[in-house]
Length: 158
Image (cartoon, rainbow, N blue to C red):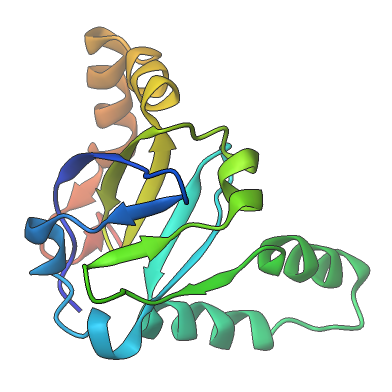
């Protein structure tokens, strides 16, 4: 899979449908055949996965020891609300009302590509999230996260 790029401002119609932006749709060649999966994110947002990426996550989850209560709790919470999305003939997807309420998404939202997934944020929360990290803090964060990274293969020494 190629990594997804871009940031897209979108609006929901009265029924909770969103048109998938054409530039994003071009990056998802199998979306009309395979569909997408939307789920709760970890930060009061939603996350959209391609079907193939979702299947990779399910494979990882299936390897967890289900006899461990923390594993069961995590899988239960993570899977809660996961919903398949299919594009209609107008290129729209219907985002589930319960998930929109969880992420506090109104009519305006932002789709922010994040490697192999698409984060869905209310426009206000997305701007707040980005604004929480100043330019100086971002520079420090970059040094901490990427400073010891060998761009050819991973962290130095690994």
